[in-house]
Length: 574
Image 1 (cartoon, rainbow, N blue to C red):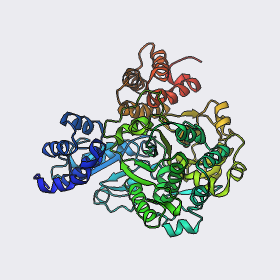
Image 2 (image 1 turned 30 degrees about the vertical axis):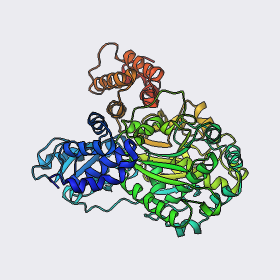
Image 3 (image 1 turned 90 degrees about the vertical axis):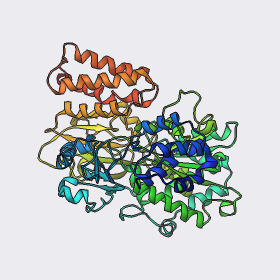
Image 4 (image 1 turned 30 degrees about the horizontal axis):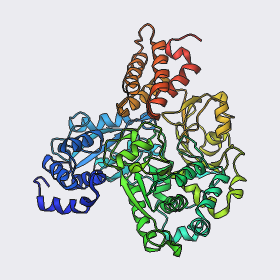
């Protein structure tokens, strides 16, 4: 639609008017779905409808990469060039697509049909190289003719699930979302039924006793977080699911949402009951259209069956869950930046303290957990904390989802008990190296993780063992690199990611990620300056110590680990 249809636009915006600024992202997304971009007149109309200054609206539009203030092609093709896809030819696929139309990345073909864009990690690492064609995720795009990709004729990639356990992933692997009927048949919502038979305090005690900690990287005790929000003064309270999985190499939450969406909902409802929250939000990454669709359908099913809404299962507890789509910003995976985004602002992280348990979403007590964490909750409530603690290790109970990608034969999501060795994950579950070239290194924890060497293959994958080995578990990324890989280029790819995704709010990260990128570019091109290794280490530690949030604090973690293991790569002496 090329011309602004004011009556249609006003009808589209009417549902958002009562919500005010917090509806800004949904309103912008609705307008963009009509026009393909956000015309200036439409932005003005949104401002009038929501009471938001036009300058603020454009500040939000320019912050998020999936909003387009200018016309784009009828189909936007995002080609991933982050670490897993870069290893498998993502850059070449981007170049080929641009060459096909005689354009540069970010430009639109002469016929107006296609805009080709470089994309950060799409969470399709087991299908690398991957792309998002319009609202369709496609994988292994190097196996198909370019014309077939652009025509949307490549089949949607199917989830790859395996492991030694299938607790969290019991309903996954069908290539489609499990229905409510299937979820109930597998014991679904039994945890909620038991939770509603207990007091909220007893539910929290059960979670504390289980030893569950966050699975997003920080590993904070879930029960303590819930207890803090439950005891905090202030109403209303909120429960938020962080489904903005953007860490390069990570795709486990996408798999859970796409194939077993009710498990996330059940965990959220239990959390809401435990802390006294009757409203929840699921913030789904903008690059996850299939996960968003699966969750939307699951919410409708749960409402119709009485698991959501008023007087859930006759308990007197009310709970509503609203889905929100992100709009392309890695920083919104940081919990306070995510709150800002839901509130209709740019996703800048907040200073802490205060912490979300007392001053979270809309300044109210809030519990925020990621998808995998919440998916553990129904299992704990259904079977009891004692049963949960019988698996895994003493300090890391339960099972864990690991994202295996890179140079392994069988990349995918593997569920295993904490304590499994890195060697077993790589060689027994993922089939070992995909070529005859032996293992050179393993990136553990994602772009914000650290490197391990073949000498560390027998390390146990648990929080305590990895900490002793100087390695982070992070988001569960296990990315294997064989000896054909240039580690300088790998680190340069990671540096590009952080420099692009820094929100710029604090100078240590804003400037540090750029300096890190510049130094690694010189090293990768074999044109280092005198003192570059020292400068690189100094920039890394400065970001780690002085940045406002986790992005800057971990932007140099992988590089610093590489400098410690392979000083010769940087021109430094042992």
